[in-house]
Length: 107
Image 1 (spheres, one colour):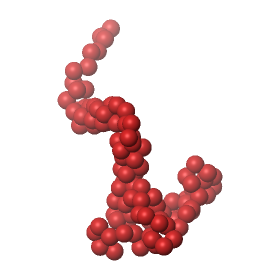
Image 2 (cartoon, one colour; image 1 turned 135 degrees about the horizontal axis):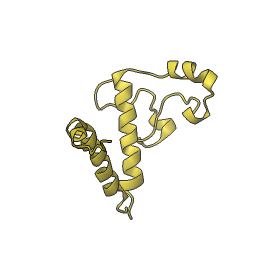
Image 3 (cartoon, one colour; image 1 turned 90 degrees about the vertical axis):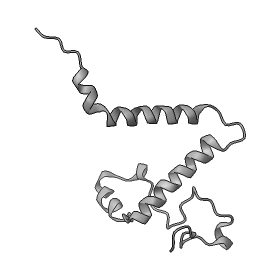
Image 4 (tube, one colour; image 1 turned 30 degrees about the vertical axis):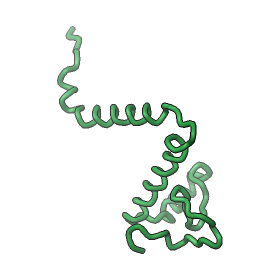
């Protein structure tokens, strides 16, 4: 599979038009329904290759796009989500500088 190709599991005759937010692989037990005793085997069945991780991030991106950004009557939610996410990101990268400005109460 080359970069930009359809997934190998995708069959247009079976699945219809391609949806980048859908996983076309073999369905497995959802994470919310996995019991603690089955957690190790569930993680063992996951594909941990860089290509699979990139695909999972891409599907999450498209699901977010379809839900918040691309509807006809999209609201202001995606803008607040981006602002909130960037606030957390910049706080995390500047935490080393910010922790020196704490107010301490000396007894």
